[in-house]
Amino acid sequence: MTDREQYAPGPASGAQVRKEGEKWTLIVVRELRHSPEKVWQALTDPAQLREWAPFDADRSLGTVGTTVKLTTVGTPRPHVSETTVTRADAPKALEYNWGGFDMRWELEAFGGGTRLTLWTNIDRNFISMGAAGWHICFDVLERLLAGQPIGRIVGPDAMKFGGWRRLNAEYATQFGVETPGRPSRPGTGTSRRRT
Image 1 (tube, rainbow, N blue to C red):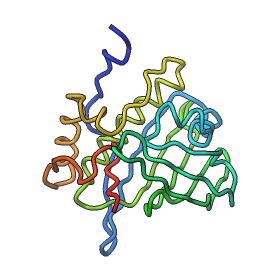
Image 2 (spheres, rainbow, N blue to C red):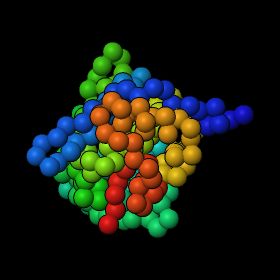
Image 3 (cartoon, rainbow, N blue to C red):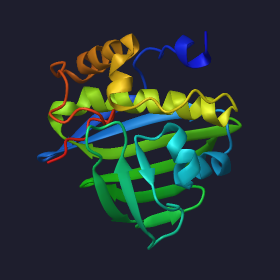
């Protein structure tokens, strides 16, 4: 049995939602056992993003002003969005927009590793799915950084894991929302609704 076959996500934790007016923001926090510099590389380097993120990038996200094409992974028809990196303060903060959703990554040295925080606006109907998807992405990221990659698990692949269904239900309970079914365009693993 491979590491991927043995993978099971832990309990739902480290996520919260905030509402400001009609805007909902999903905040996911994970403590990683790796330096901010190493985590920064995984957030900005296209080769590393291909190993854990729900999108591919055609170039590095590590420089302010860089225009990057981000392509969803695992969808029936890939969605390509062009973004400009609006903040790249290595290895502390990274900001850009993905398909109309603001993405803010914060890295803080913590206990010999990094506390990684993702802030992203999200459709209210997909909050628990987004939390479950990012939970799994962060698990895969941790394994990649530890030198034990199990391969990207996003979109329909993520939804096949019994652990994903459990996480979706647990996050829905934590957030006080109904557990949604599949998104209208399944496959992002991060609850991105594409129109």
